Amino acid sequence: MSGLFRGRKALVSIYSKCNLSGLTSPPPIEVRFSESAGRGVFATRRIGAGELIHTAKPIVSHPSLSSLDKVCYFCFTNLKSSNLLPFCSDQCRQHSKIFYETEKQAAWSAFHDYCRTQGLKYPLLVKRLACMIISGAATPETLDVLQPATLSSEMILLMEKEYQLLRSTFKDAGFTDEQIAFLSKQWYINVLARIRINSFRIELALGSYEDILLSAAASVEAEAAVGNAIYMLPSFYNHDCDPNAHILWIESVNAKLKALRDIEAGEELRICYIDASMDHDARHTILFEGFGFHCKCARCMSND
Image (cartoon, rainbow, N blue to C red; front, side):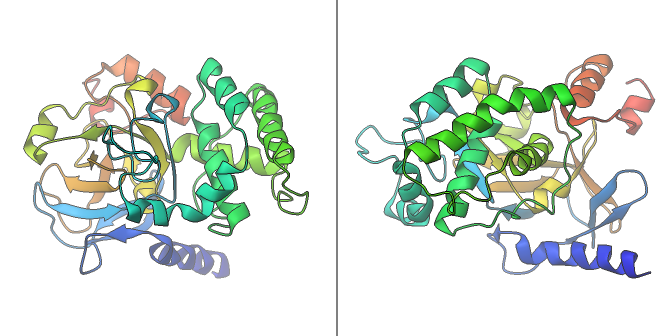
C-alpha cells in the first residue's frame, strides 16, 4: 500500500510542477494510471470539440540549429529583421537572462557543428538544461518524473562523443569541476533517455484553429521544426493513431491542447505522436523505433 500511495502522491505533485498558462481555473483533467499504458491524462468532466483543454510552457526548449537566427531564442516567435538580439521582446530577454548569460560564456561552434553533421537535436536540449542547472534556474533532477526510453548499448556508445564535447565545452569556458559536478556520463544518458520520448518537435502555425486542423499532420522532417521542447503535463498524454486531442503551437513555443471531438468525463485524452496520415505499417515502424512500443489502438487493431 505504501508504494501505491507514493505513486499516487507523485502523480498529484505533477500539477505543482506543470507550468500552465492562460487558464483561470485548473484544467478539466487529471493524471492517473491507465490499465494499458501506465500514466495517462483523463477528463474530469465533459470536454466539447474544439475546447481549449489547457496551455503549457516548456520546462526546457531550444531552437533548431537552422532557426537560430530566425526565431526568438526563448519563445521561438519569428524575429523581425531589425532585431539585434536573439529575442523578440525585452520580456523574453529577461526570462532567459539567467541561463543565456551562462550559455554566452562558452563557445558552442564545435558542439553545434557536431550536432548538425550527425543530425542530432536532443543534445541541444541537454545543453540548455545544463546551462539552466549551472545558473540555478533548474536542478539536475528536473526531468526525473518523466518516463525514460530504453536505450540499447549501441545507442549509449554513440552518445560518448556528444557527451565529451558538451563537458569539454564547459571546461574550456572556465567552468569549475564543482559547477559541472552533476554532468556525469550517467546523468547525460538518463536525461537523453527521457528527452528521447518526451520531447515535442515545435512547428509554429499562423492562422485560426480551424485552418490548423486542415493541416494537422506534422512533418517528419526534423529541420521543418523551429525547435524542440519538453513539457510536464503534455508529456503524460498517451498516443493514439485516431486521437481525441491535439497539441499545437501558434506563434510561440507555448503549447495548446485542444479537443478534436467531444470527450466524456472519465475518458482518456490521447494525442498522435506522429503523422496520422501514414499507413499502418509505417506508423508501427516509426512508433516502435522512435518510442519503443507497438501501438494497439483501435485503429491499428482494425488494421485501418
